[in-house]
Length: 87
Image (cartoon, rainbow, N blue to C red; front, side):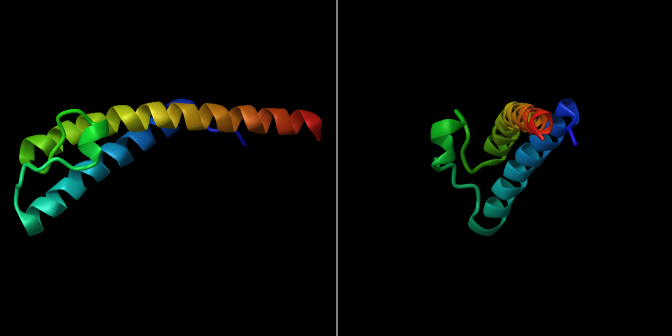
């Protein structure tokens, strides 16, 4: 069964973006908006533990999830096609 690349990429983008947004607000709720940089700030430029950082993380997560979802679904479909031709 093949994956719909567009639908999978959109789903991955929403999960990554909203997940990072909610995770940031979870930390803000318990620790406060510290503005400290995390390990994610190395990869996601401008991200930190703050309300603005949560929006930046949302944007980066959407982009990162979209790209990762496209690559995953494309590779999955490629492997499914090659295995169905062999057997």
